View 1 (cartoon, rainbow, N blue to C red):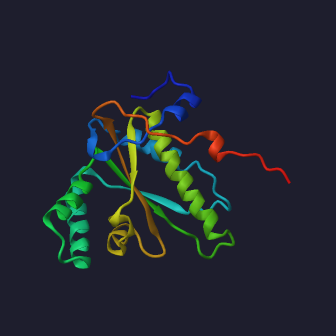
View 2: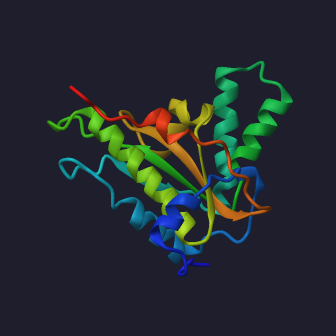
View 3: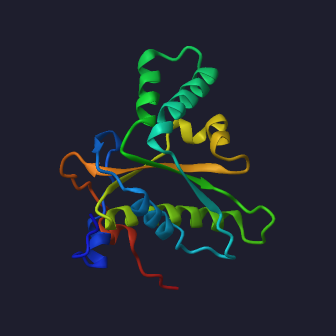
Length: 192
């Protein structure tokens, strides 16, 4: 599925997030996913701290993830309605591939936490670009599960935080372009 006819700029200008619930097979195989994640790690990283990690959630463990998420949600919200719980179960089963990105700050470093947070964001964006370059669509989601300490603890431990759930697959239909900002409204020239 590698898109070897595209130019780097055309890949950057055509990358579009997909809705994980609309992704279908095929997703990346093990070698493709390894390549996507290797590219994700090639990101600006002041101090060479690697303040991020990626955890692959294999298909055969998605039921366990759904149970984890719904159990944690019910512990916080015992009055949760059936549709809420079904949504959480569906969340865990979306798309052929799932990667959890974790922000792993190096608190003992002299590099400010803000710069480390920027690095994890850049690593996540590289993941999205690499998936697109491989011919897949990807979606970066957070939601309740990303902010749950119980869910986070299944993948790491404090002070780590979930930066996002990355769903990767093939689009079930053509992706629609979303409105983009007018460059003139977000770009200016500094004049002292």
